[in-house]
Length: 276
Image (cartoon, rainbow, N blue to C red; front, side, top):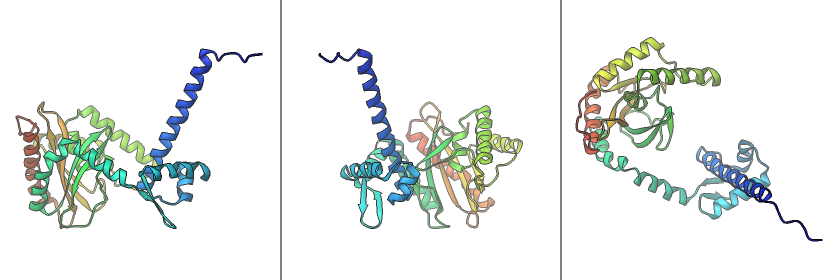
């Protein structure tokens, strides 16, 4: 007796199962890359963080190594592979903002000697697109490709100048709720009325200050970058340890950073470099 032909629903179920399995494998591989990027390079640590058996983990790791996304160092563990270096370089090249801004950022870091950042908004966070380390102060934890909260970073607060006050409050409440939920050891934000007053003042002057709100001992000055439509599309900041950047220095640097952000805006086609 012949076996019955599979019903259309059976085929769809099989395709759906394969698709779900493929998606799971893809997500698992991407999570592995992120863990290795964070410094988790041993099989035991990766297995625990990923929550999969070592046999499954070894198969995924072997495939990633074979394709060049990971590199295995015997008796040491896994590091990111050459293909990710290539992809990271291509990703930066495909963001024309980074290329346009780079000469202005180089001039700024040479002028002030502090660390310079370029960032864009991604949801409630700032994505660091570029970083040029200065010769004054300690190295900061920020990295290209890293994300940090908008609400408490100099770059982030500069990006927020393009948002409404209602959105400011939403971001503020989200940050407070996250701190309470996770118990993160981060500096406390100003009370909301004071935070709102400071942001309104920053909007009027066109640049922001951030004093140890994201990282203890670090001061930062930032300004927004606008596109041809006048929309805030990025931000520039200068940051250093508070010893090298006291409040008086921040007040001096504010207009300088705003001027550089204005030049980048002009290069992007913005007609008006003035403050909003």
